[in-house]
Length: 163
Image (tube, rainbow, N blue to C red):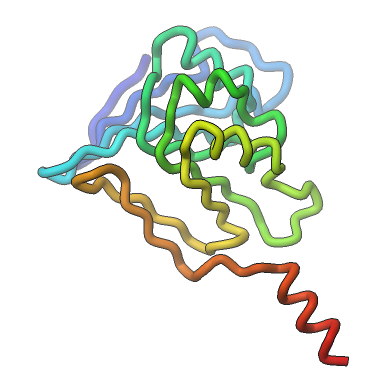
């Protein structure tokens, strides 16, 4: 595995494994295990890019990654982004999916959210909160969001009732 340091970050490429031939581009998406130390606290992160659940499962079953603080959810939180057993092995405290508002795929899928919340992760999606930033904290990861979660159903009700 390739590894390198950038400032306070230690980065290890955990997927794809050398020689892996993907049938679909998403399955060759780079997964990075990143450790950040701010001098007092450490944050462990798995950045999964557009990888799907089989690839992330492989990084866990081979021992490349274990218990983490923060998971960047693969493939925008699609239903095929994570297996429940993989989530249990990773035990992320915070999980973030990147998806656009009103995206045509309906990401993130509730199945993925339920899997993550089922293992105790605090789940955030950029379509609801805008930018989501995760920091190491004394008692686990700290999260900062661009804005409060917008209840789109409530907004539609307000717009429809203004009539």
